[in-house]
Image (cartoon, rainbow, N blue to C red; front, side):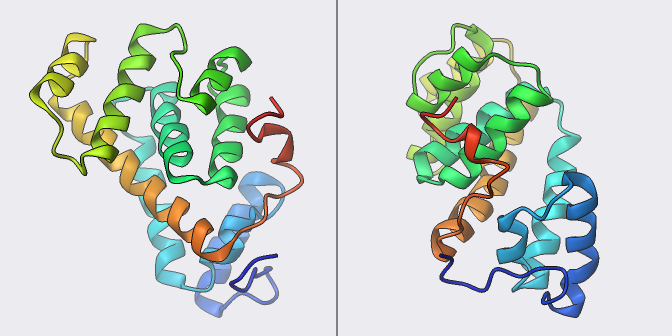
Length: 184
């Protein structure tokens, strides 16, 4: 049970309703994260706006999802792990084996994706003040300064969602439960 109000389209504050409608149209259901964020229309707007900006990053969808899954795992947000696992499998076309590795913080077997996960982990652990070796390893894997900052962008997006879900105790929607750690 959520500690914060879990809004529906009918109960959402007026300023949140257009965002709730968009989420329902995009997903076919209302993700409980959106229902929670609807309590603060500016938080919901920020989430959706930054999500759109993050989608325009030069990192591929799979690379962006590595950042999201890694951050959610570190932050202990099963809701976001499940949501981004669904995207990983359905939209990014990645394997169940690789996502299980991400759930465990283990290598996926893809050197580039593993470099993204390692860099995201270092950024979170050191609050951005990564060692020179961490940045050099990321660059040596074929990434650049722009993409290092895009990892930070992805982490900032994940932090909003992960922390909001932790604050609320957001329940995982039935549609996302098959994507929880241990279920894939």
